[in-house]
Image (cartoon, rainbow, N blue to C red):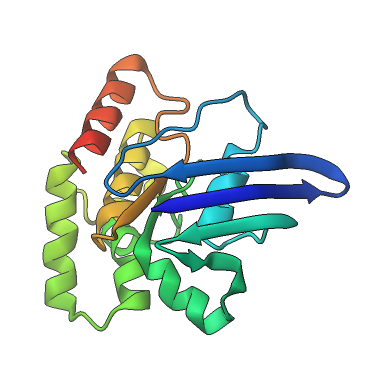
Length: 183
């Protein structure tokens, strides 16, 4: 369960979030809808502990996110998979290494297990055989699907998707939303 109480955030004196309250039950697919630059991305990063609010509190599974030490936050972030608005793929890593990145950084899984999980995720997003491709050679829809694969590879209990269909054609957008419903 995610509970947000009176959250405020500003950047260089400009308010971005003002008194946000929200409760998202466990097991729920929930969407935040609003115009561009309305603070949706900022709120997701606050929930995941990547940004600190200027006021208010955020609870995930009863834990006050921003009362945690840095060490506690690192462990806490294992609860999340996240698809960033711009996909956040590393241009210098191939597709397999992009998807494997969180597993290599946060687990002690062996390379064989990592390779199997990467291959599985690529099948789920309908991009089998893309392991050695580089992000620069992918379409926008393919990059989104690689981002979905990376966000879900750790089987985290909470996955935050930031504008999963932004900039995509209607057919690819529909495919992305079908993937999200499955995951």
